[in-house]
Length: 174
Length: 174
Image (cartoon, rainbow over the protein chains, first blue to last red):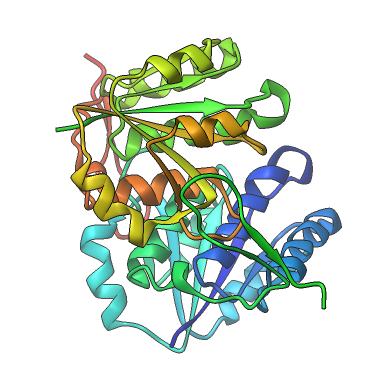
C-alpha cells in the first residue's frame, strides 16, 4: 500500500494556524502517514501530536523544513492539488497507473511558486473552482483510497463509538 | 434534484474567518445552493459574494440568523455532520432513502449544543476521528452527489481551463 505524505507550503503561523491544523488532521483521518510544513511552528506540532496521542495511530508532523530540497529529492509520485490542474475525474486513473511506494501531496496556502507546478508529477484540480485545500485534500484521499482511509482503526486511547444521537467515547485509561 | 443548504454554527468572526470562508466556498464548489451563518459577519458575506460574482453560479450567503428557529422550521432532511455520528458508510444509504426536496447540512465550529443532535434527522460522522468540518462537508457532498457537484458549470465571468502544468483562466470581461 502506498505511503502518503503531505507537504504544506506557505503556512504563516498567525494567519493559517487553524486551516493548517485542519489540513494535518484531515491527512491523518483519511489515512496519510505524515505531514511536512515549510514554516517552523511548534504550537502546531504540539496540537497535532496531542490528537495522535489521544486518538491513536502513528501520524507524524515535521515543521520548518527546506521544502525545495525536500520536494526535489522525494522519491515517488508528487501530486500538487491546485484549482488550475487537471480535473480529478480525468487525473485519478492516471495517478492509479503511476502509483509508487510513496506519494507526496502538495497543498499550498494562497499562491504557490511556479516551480511546484514544474516539480509535480501531476497537478490536479479537485474541481476547478476556488474553495479549500482542506476540502481538496479530503476528497482526493477519499477517492484515491476508495473510502478505506475513513475505515482505519487507529487503536487510540480514545475511541468514538458511532451513535445516532449524542456522544459516546470510550476512554481507555488502563 | 435536492436543493442543499448549509447551516454554520458557532462562527466567531475573528477566530473562524478563514475556516468559515472555506466552508462556504466548499459548499458552493460541491453543488450546494447557499449557506446560513449564525453570527453576523459582513466581511465574510462580501468575500463569498465576490467569488460568486467572478466565478459564477447563484450561491447565496446569509449571516446573522436566528438559527434555532431556522433549524426548527426547516422543511426537509436535516443532516448534522459530527465525528460522534453514524459512520457515513452506514448512514448514506439511509439518507438516500429519506431524500426530500430540500436538505440542510449543519456544521459547527467546536462544540455544538445538544439540541442540534436532537433536531437532526441524521447525525453523521465522516469517519469518527477529529479532523475538519470543511473536509467533512466536502466528502459528504462529494459522495452524496457521486461527484456531480464538481462537474457543475457555473458559467462564471472567470473560468479556469484545466491544465497539466501552469494556470489558464478565461476572463470574459464583457
